[in-house]
Length: 136
Image (cartoon, rainbow, N blue to C red; front, side):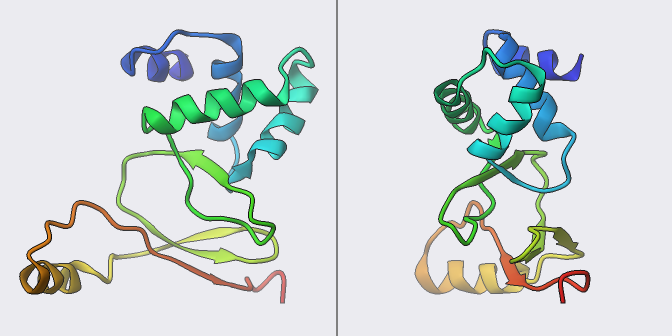
C-alpha cells in the first residue's frame, strides 16, 4: 500500500487516520481544505474527528508529504500531495480546478535575482487565478 510506504519512508507511525487522509488526497484532482477532507472521512470512518485531521495535516506539512498550494477565497488553507515536482498552476477561483503550466517562466529571472541580490533561491511557487472555461 503506497500510503504506508510514504509514512514509513518519512519515519512516521502508520495510523488509520494518516493512511485514510493520504488515500483521500491521492484520489482527488484538486486541493482540499481540512473541512473537505473531514467530510470525506466521515463517509469512511466517523470515529476520526476534525482536530485529528488538523494534527495529521500539520505532521504531513512538517514532513513535506503535502503542501498548501494556495488559499481559497474564504481564507481557508487547502492541501495537496507533494509529488516533489517543480510545477506551476492556473487555478479557477470558482471550482478550484488546477491546470498545470507547461514550463517554469522563472529560470532566467531567478538567476538574475540571485546575481543582483546575492540570495540563493532555493524554491518558488507560481499560481495564477482566474475563471476556467467550464465556470465562465
